[in-house]
Image (tube, rainbow, N blue to C red):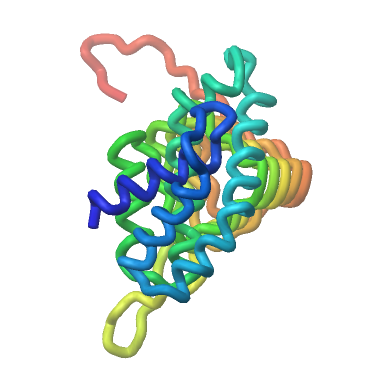
Length: 240
């Protein structure tokens, strides 16, 4: 299946970004995409996926714009599409998310794990991510399965949006309930911050780097780590 999914992503990349990659024959590419999805899930779901491609394309173009708007190092948008790991992982994620919504097993998770291996960015296909989503650098980002991310959100490297704990059924199996954070619109989370649990980060909030956050915060918050504690110099081999 991995070979099939690699071909699917290659075709989707050409379909979504023809202005940057060139396009031999979009109609033929769509036919090939439908054939690949049909092999995974059958005719009806293949047709449903084809109908979602314009929206997938629109969302990915907003992701490109978000990176361009937030990174002064960008030379042009072609550089973003060809080089930036954030767009690579979002192409995989947005395709995988649509397959998951169609209740296609295994393939969505395999797609995002392929991107995880290539970029170091781990986004579960079940996460809900809005438009104009930007990732800067990205290595080490983890986005859990029930995470909800609004529009115009930016994450830096090493951010974890994870679960704090689990609930269990009577047989001791963990329940698949909402357990990951909600980030409202216009939230920025800086490097190496961890946000755990079903907490809500209000819109227009900035969370600084190296923060450990397990509670909700209201809109327009500024969350910073506490200052480092300065200790006198150690003497006589004394430890901390």
